Picture 1 (cartoon, rainbow, N blue to C red):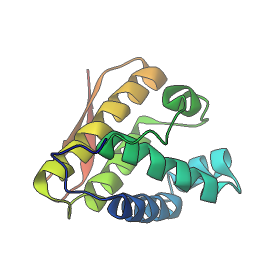
Picture 2 (picture 1 turned 120 degrees about the vertical axis):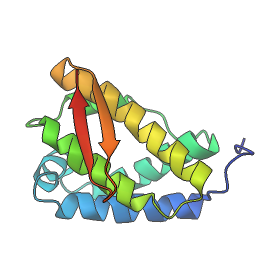
Picture 3 (picture 1 turned 90 degrees about the horizontal axis):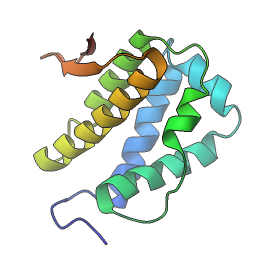
Length: 139
């Protein structure tokens, strides 16, 4: 069932995922962590991420998996990595319609807070500056 309040399409989510992860892979801080975890399986990972974001935004049923558990297995994650990840996401979602942009960012922030708590046993908030750079505030 498609969310009646969204204007986003599967193709837009596909494009978002692919361009976002291209920047993640090129990021000097994030690229090595993701490449170590994903290796040669980027095509499969990208397909799963498209399915994940379609599930989140369009209420499709194509995704299942343990997002938290998979991420907790990553090695070398530091708080600054969350700033990089969220800044890329903030940048790549800026052209979406306002309601869709807000939902995409809120979903990413919810995921980020959960993962940050899992990695560091601290709460986090993600604060975007006027320049689009996201910083982590912890408590």
